[in-house]
Image (cartoon, rainbow, N blue to C red; front, side, top):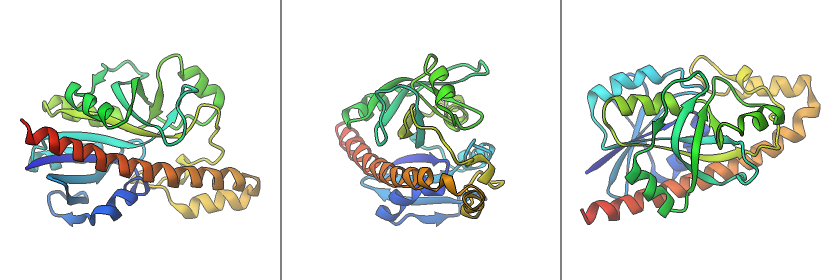
Length: 244
């Protein structure tokens, strides 16, 4: 059976897919890991946190089993005007601004994602923080197509172990949309958003409420689209595996 390790940053990104397949906890690692059969694939899921503060915990997990493939997924900021909320992008390569080597997605998985309807993005940038302003996104657009905070460290772990991997992202905020709320200030030590901290920001600045509600609606829709795409991807993966 194919074993896939799927990494999300936030539990909210995972929740729609988790509900579709009744993922249950497993004792593979001290860090929480969930498993379910998605078609003929045994899918293991764990959360790295925003900015991947728990990336090193993957060492323990990968010591317990070697997945057939790895996918790092979740939301991303669009840097090009053509990328709209809900667009699923697959990155040809991932890099960071501090000059680390680019990590390419596996060619076979990349082709499979495109066959499933993902839009090909040449470059995904992994940033140390959220690109919150239109000016920052516009500047970054000269360097890449979309931005996230976790893909590079995850891809690096798999690359070092020779595990085929893929960076797959759904666009949340397009280039012309600023992030009014300070979500980084709302993160806990595990890189998870605490809604009480968001509510505290909104209480102090109620003018942010319309932007927050708009983002929440977009986020809810985009994460459902991502869950449906992952099902389609693993369905294609099953058919490809059965013909090999």
